[in-house]
Length: 141
Length: 164
Length: 112
Image (tube, rainbow over all chains, first blue to last red; front, side, top):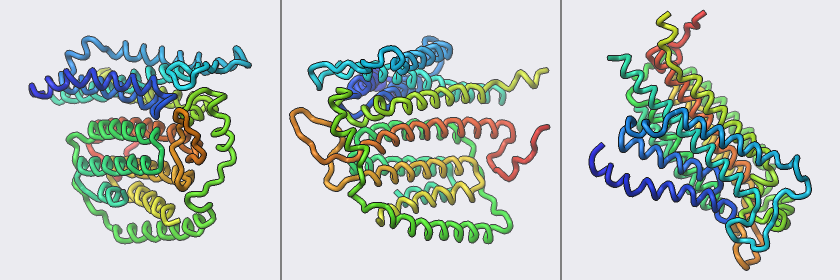
């Protein structure tokens, strides 16, 4: 990719990542939620991969690491979702102040787990589809 | 939006029809904003972007010239006739719905009046989707995981079988 | 009333594309259009005239709100549509590798 794209990507990748984390954490106050935040984090990584080529990015983020992160996110969400069997009278501890960040109890934790799983999983899918192009070109040569 | 959808269906070039699909998705996102659903507008916009990325990857240089078969006229007229019958019956059925703008919100009244105290989250849509109807979110996470595993299983290397 | 009917026309455009087109990518595009139409219909049913978005604000009493229940359902449905599209496109890539064409009338040989 050309030099203009690389320079602008250095500025905007961090912004997109922070925006995705912001939408995830503010899911219970503003519109947003876990799913949209996770996909925005995936878009940040896709932009990094499109601008700098795939060899440099694949050195740091393998496919195995991505699958491990997706598995961790899924198990975390399962643990949070099965909290109903532990303490049936205290599902979500509601704090005194209503519009702060940590006021909805387990809702924030489950959103973070969902965002982690969605981001890692969709990144693995993108890596798979891109690596398929590489195999095709190698077989044609 | 209907215009963009018709263009997406009829254009012969594949990349142009994908871009027309993305225009229809953007129209849908604006419609969600007009209907006062900001939660959905964010999700629809972002999912639309990812959908277009995946579709462009699938069609990157694989165009196909359109070849008309015999019996094309009969097939088209039969399809359009059955779609017209479907539209007629749907018009008769859609008259029975409540008027636009006055829904019967029996269950939602309970959610609106007691949602803030029970869950502590001002965003009612997230409270309903993750707390009152939490098992749906669990099933959705399972579906995403199935999509990941399915894609990994389909796109394996085919070189191993041919070498044996 | 006419808004519901227009939504159904959008659904029929997608249905026509799934039934009549011979290119696999056009069929996947038609599937996407049908999914947009169904989501729009569900949100149209739950709209209240002069309603507000279903989010509470600080120190404000909001009485008439749009229905939040279909919105929670459609939130799930949008992500499911994405998952279906991803698997369909990866199947289409695989079919192209094996047969060299996207035409569905030429994909007939089942390897036994």
